[in-house]
Length: 177
Image 1 (cartoon, rainbow, N blue to C red):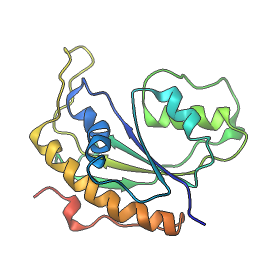
Image 2 (spheres, rainbow, N blue to C red):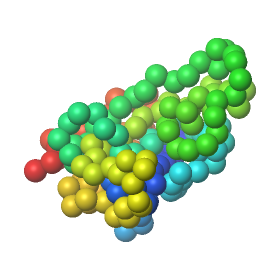
Image 3 (cartoon, rainbow, N blue to C red):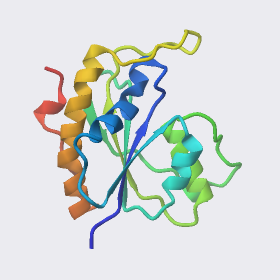
Image 4 (cartoon, rainbow, N blue to C red):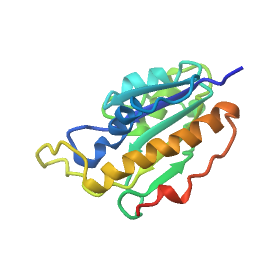
């Protein structure tokens, strides 16, 4: 039986390198992933992603820009700690696209455990501040990382479809040239 896997692009296309996730999803149109993987651009629709995570997937790979202190364009595969549904309290905020808030909301909404979640993160070069004007389009460094992310997904996704508990590694190609 083939595992069900979600590849979700997240990010704001009007905030520079934050558009990494949607750009990767768009690039996958030309290089589709194998059957068993659902590929979808969620943009900034956090509520939609929270409900999608409750759809019975074994694994979800979120594709997003994330400042982690690496060289711009560096790709990382991260497995975040998932929120505990039993923590109680009021429902998390449903606005925006902060992946941690989306995971907390999904945990709050669902009766079943969340799928295993991995994040394919790209170190941004240019993220406008909240008070700046819109800045559509990613930097040249992140544009180049989009192609490497597509290649990485073509390695990671088949491994996760074969074994949802696998710990796939990114190759040296994940690092900027």
